[in-house]
Amino acid sequence: MPVWLRGHSWRQSGSAVFLSLPVPGVRVTAANIFCTERYLKVSVPPFLFEAILYAPIDDTNSTAKIGNGIVFFTLYKKEVGMWESLTLENGNKEKLQYLRENAVLKAHEKAKEETEAKKVTKQEHKKYALEATMKLEEAERKRIEELKEQERQKVTKELELWKDQLKNVENQKKVQKEGQLHEEVEQLKEKKKEKINKTSIPSEETLKTRLKPTKGRGSCSMFSENLKEEQLPAPRSSGTIKINFTSRVFPTALRESRVAEEEEWLHKQAEARRIINADLSELKDLKEEEKNPDWLKDKGNKMFATGNYLAAVNAYNLAVRLNNKLPLLYLNRAACHLKLRNLHKAIEDSSKALELLTPPVPDNENARVKAYVRRGTAFCQLELYAEGLQDYEAALKIDPKNKTIEKDAEKIRHVIQGTMQNS
View 1 (cartoon, rainbow, N blue to C red):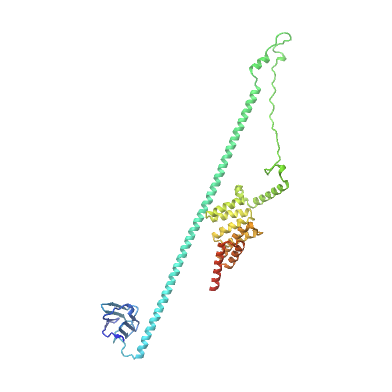
View 2 (cartoon, rainbow, N blue to C red; view 1 turned 90 degrees about the vertical axis):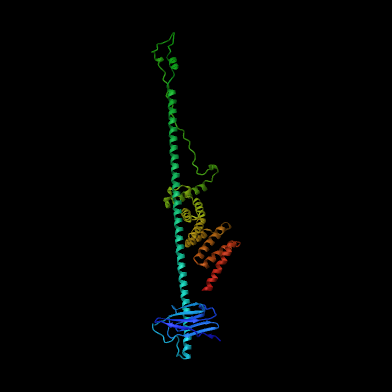
């Protein structure tokens, strides 16, 4: 049986009640005190104190101080006024029991409301933290995009500067060659003039021999017509010997060539150049090697290896415009679109690569596996797991020993099963 605490004292003012409750020989904590608007209870085994208060109090602002074996309560009244007694004296047992049960019920409801309020507050805090994290991630993503754009512009400027430098070097070489040719031509002209002058001017001894008079019979004077200065013949005029060779595009000799096949190849090349020049007039400033799709593909591969995916896409785009029948161009561009999160474009390029990789032969098995995996990856990132699983299974049919593809396909199956269970 509990021991009822009777030795309490109390006093009041118009707005508060002050209750002093001695609890000898035991340690009291906040867990031993229960207080509502009309009910106050202190339970410290073996002691018990219970009071049905005379009038309602503000249990939220009321306080209890524990110390020196005494619990001192400060109970604030809800309505200002003086109480006739601390507890309700004239109530019957049923009323007191009702008030006691009602107080406990209200306390439970209040605790439940506080728990719900804490739960809502916690959810709001989580939501705020999530929004803050998303904002930070968005800012970081924008920063990375800006860095990529700056790097792309930097690479573009460096490429243009490199082209300008090459043009300047070529122009300088051209000017130097023209200057050298001009000097050589002038030197040849001077040598030719010297030769002509040496040939046309006779020496003094030759002139004396020619003008020396003859003695004896039949001689004549120096003024005779026979002694007139001999006229030297004029130098022969220079000429050019022209030699014509049969024009050949191929390095092999004509006797070793197949003329019909060569003509067909040249016709196709000319037609392709005509189409390119008609459709891509902006390529006239590029070098011949820069108009080569294979060269552009290698350039795009280098850009992809350095992480410059936008520049790689530009290189592949130009290569596709030059030759839209190379499946590797679409396959590599799909990998770039995956890195840039352009998922629909990745699906389109992978599908186009699969169209071009026909008929399916052992030589294009590796390319077809890559195309199916990249398209399946794009589908999964778009949460189209069924389509993605189909592509992974198609890749496994081609390369059944590939453990990486098998593991990824198994993960996709688990995701699909989990989605079906949740739905």
